[in-house]
Image 1 (tube, rainbow over the protein chains, first blue to last red):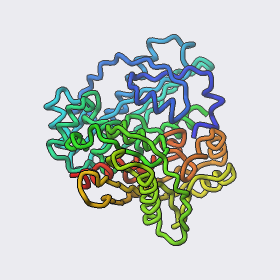
Image 2 (spheres, helix red, strand yellow):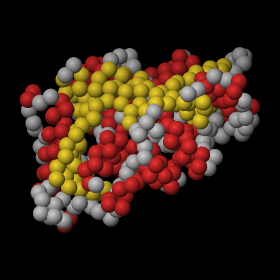
Image 3 (tube, rainbow over the protein chains, first blue to last red):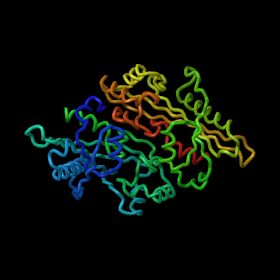
Length: 208
Length: 208
């Protein structure tokens, strides 16, 4: 999808404002970009109760991207990508589990049900070649995920694998959690933490 | 999902009758199994016109698995997994493109449309511990895939990447083809060539 704009992106510094190895992999392997990782130090302390889930992830992604931009010199980058992913069920936001009991509670809640995964993305383009300010664009993507009916022993053996602890919603669809998921409706990569198709479409419009 | 039957599968020879690196990765990384690859030499020459797509992939998977079983001694294996994947649109089966022009024709056909990916799987369990014959079980999974509206230059730059040529339907959802796909409905791993959730569910019933 990015083939026609490869000549613009080639040899430019594209920075991902997130330490997530899954996002890096999607940008490199699935989109063919060369990415430099500079994790944001933004504390992600927004008051969830004041945001709709879509606004929450877009605002987090924006603050992450701008945080990294503020720490770099203009010539050090061409594009900065901020991103934030949450799991939402019954309008409640689930992030990473705080401990094993929390992981069990979340997975039990998701079992035999459909939830949404929302990822917000912000693109920031440098103003180095003109006199404009930074150009900033935020968007989000959502995907429905339907979990199988999980026995407690399935949940517990999955928690014992260690896979849930660093992941929003307590599961990794790209790792041992994949067989817990019966079906999805939407972009799979969005569930991994980065909406591959929408990013490519928005990026083409943004930098052309 | 396989956690509760790990004690049965552990230290057993599980053979994948397919050389597909994507299937091996799903079985190992997503399902935690140790897999030995022995590609089937079955020529895959069934007359497509005589089968519904679902029967076609199940029959191919069965013939692949039994072909590999017939070449092994009984003590050399516990479980053999055969698998076959096709892309289906307007009841027509698309397999791997034969050349670049064929890849273009297929991708143009899939553009701005929804098609189905069908994977057939056959499980063959050894009879070594009892006097029964082989136990054989076949099933299939289907997933809807919706392509974005692709310009010719997007299709051509994707073909030039080389990605389409070894893949059913001329695209790899797990590699550079991912941004061509707007959304899917069903199991993502099925589109990669192996239905992770259904396999785990069927395997639990099959060997318990």
